[in-house]
Length: 324
Image 1: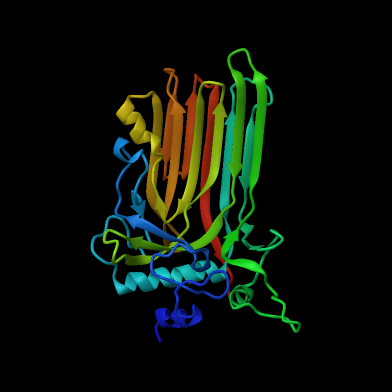
Image 2: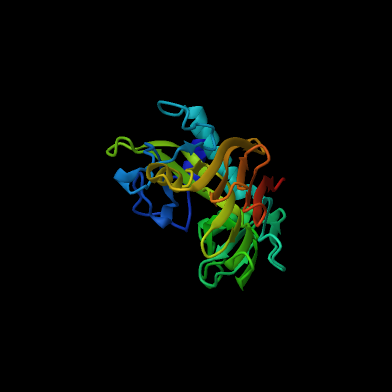
């Protein structure tokens, strides 16, 4: 019996399980009962003709390695690999990686903010209380099929298709400074999440092509420094599909003064193919402005107004898995 056959039995013949029993499933459905489906192809970049809203994704990469650089249908080996890695993520992942962010408004006293998370245990969120609990792989499987106690009550009333880690956030607000009005610096890190999604090519809307399973894309780390007129921010993320900020296309059309730099690159975490995004957006109104975005260091930084606005975000993606 192949991995795919085994999974189809586990998933009641409907593909990826999520919140308990699956019903009324159809290919390409976005019903929360079957998990999210993402149309990653065709890609149409933002422009004035579509109100700067992209169709599909500039970069995508399934957990089996099939990506935007490939043409035609994925191989059965790529589909099976995406499934095996998705199951490894969903049922066996224990902890997710580190992230940090910082932002500062130059010499403004107390304006420095920083946030960080270390590898943290991923938890399931209770569907009624909102509280989170770390379930073992066995409990995750059982929570899907609704294990009941002697009185017929569900033992694990959780959102079983979504795992979430810890987060940290700091913010600084001030009314005014000698150089800037209404200043703010803000840093957030986490949470890393695990949500399994199905990636489709919907070029033929009557016959969508399943490309493989993916990890729901997430921004894990952000930083921001701003006043009443100007703003700089960074973000760093990981997942299976990303677009750069649409303002890069809008500004190009309109000749605006914003600078947007981004890097979307392949990465491998525990042998699983993924993508990282690092992006910087600044209002470029000063010769001292500089922005960088690097996948090599998994980080993004900004420096604006000769050091008045500085900040960075970075991620160190890693996943620890339960072993037996």
